[in-house]
Image 1 (cartoon, rainbow, N blue to C red):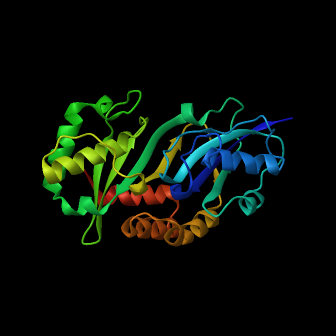
Image 2: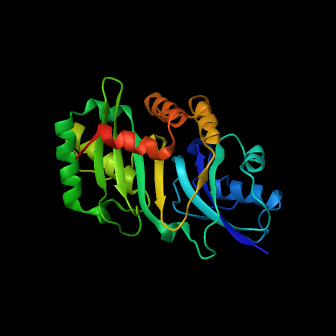
Length: 263
């Protein structure tokens, strides 16, 4: 007899070709599924559902996944078998029809890169205002989505980042907004092209109809490895590593939002 299990997972995007399974490539989904099957926790023909299908090189502190489980899941046992760049840090037993993509009500992403620190807040506001006037679909490689809420996160003189808050994001949408903002703010170029994936992190996923039991030691242990494993800009790595070690994800988001301002 199977039962539905949901997990909150974190991973470093550097070593993965995105979240979704692709033949012959190392992805988050295939790595997790291989582990679950190996441990006898999922049927070989089963699959993992996710709230977000992050692109190649994009990292996450809080992506929600679910699967039909054929055994008893222990985070200790699971994490002992997972690679060091992927960890499960919270678990839940949702209703049988739970789907993390449909249950998702909000996602919070952070983008950090050195170029943003070269742009004044006033110029950033002007660039975001122009991008918003173009509409969300202008930044979607595929599909369509509303333009997200954007907030400025400033920690002078160390770094400046952008928080993106919304329910749904298209393929490369955030990276394309960031790329446009940088090109316009620095060079007056109205060019839509994606910024590098290494600067983007999925910080928080809010799902309805499920209550998780976190084991934050796994997230904190993972954060300690972030600086040594990640090739992302050091400013982002320090923020993620320090924040995840000190706070759970909900407190992290509250802290960052309180330090940010709307653009």
